[in-house]
Length: 407
Length: 146
Ligand SMILES: Cc1ncc(COP(=O)(O)O)c(C=O)c1O
Image (cartoon, each protein chain N blue to C red):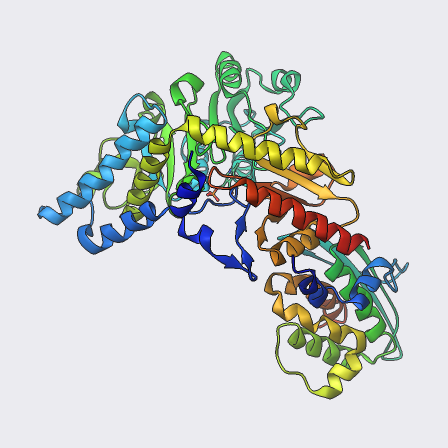
């Protein structure tokens, strides 16, 4: 991969922060957007703006075609068996809440179990916790090993014949680990449960095949894979979707309405009530095209190098604790750490002054912070468009921050 | 890198207070007010004892970043011995100072070392760190929190 050419595709990477070159290492929070995505959105508003699935005029047909073409593109991107399995939401959060409020609401009974893991983001925990409370179901947690990976013995213990839903992150937004989805899916299915996968941190970094994974639902956000904010995806197995009654009603999702009765539109329109985020979906399409042109082989080669430089660089500091696996082979592009005696916020402010953007906080995973026995951590996360110079600048700035506070 | 900029926020006074905070601890038999900063998880507990209309004893505890710990520490120095009314005015003055609003010199003088934290106004993401303890104190003093 020609890294300087790729960086030129992302205008923001060529800007400054606090008088220093912007070193953007908060990619797990949201990725930057290539010019192609920005252009696709403005092209849509400049030339193609109309509501979808409504007008008979040519402009409306063009908008609808573009919107629906992205559905095909997403289906191909995650290897869904058919386009009807894919529908657009606001975000991962929205997708996961949809599953809880639709599948969960319609299938759970008192005494049933929902199983999550100890590394879940709040958006794949709180919807299940609240559902469990509403249904008098039990929320159970699969524990982690000392290196932050899923404890298989715990998974086998927690998933039982009473389990109806297993909800798990494909990749952790804190520990940089990937969960064994295929294996978990098999276990869940053996017990008659479905598996809901939070793919927010996976889709930009590895090819996803929902059929190989055997995921019943798979959720992700556009903004974490070079696309705009405000658009998300939910994939669901068609046989499951067909059993569900929509939870939201209105325009677009109907085929016939009388005063007494409504016939719903076919799937997937049935689950897309109201005017969708058309420009967002079109922007997402441009993001997927960009990623497909680059190819995951090139993306992964570059990200593995960056992760190695980042992780190994951090591990050379004797007073830095890295959470999660300590070996690059097991570590994804997200690295959470702390520096002895320096609060994560102070580290992040120090780095900010050197133009380095990292996250400090609980990363929307407060229960995981309890497991790690820390209030918060710093987190650096890379994307293929980061350069070796970015990591070097980060490590040098960290050294300077350490010297400042430890003087 | 520009470590000089770090000095803009982390002045020596602030670093010293954070390293060896004043009035750190807990008082038995005095109600405690605990506030947390949901974005970073910092927690600060403040206890204020008022005797004859004046703050006779004040303590804080909890964990947080340099700014929140130092701010709590300087606050306890500033508020000790003040009347409830005067303490509330000082808290208001401090709250203005850290968001970059003008404060009469009389107040910056009385805020003493706490006025140094006025530099936090240039670091918008850290203002909440500076105000956490002061909000807790205001609440403890019976003032309605923001
Ligand atoms: C693992 C994980 N799940 C879910 C989310 C929620 O994504 P969003 O805020 O786009 O809904 C995030 C990102 O914040 C995440 O990292």
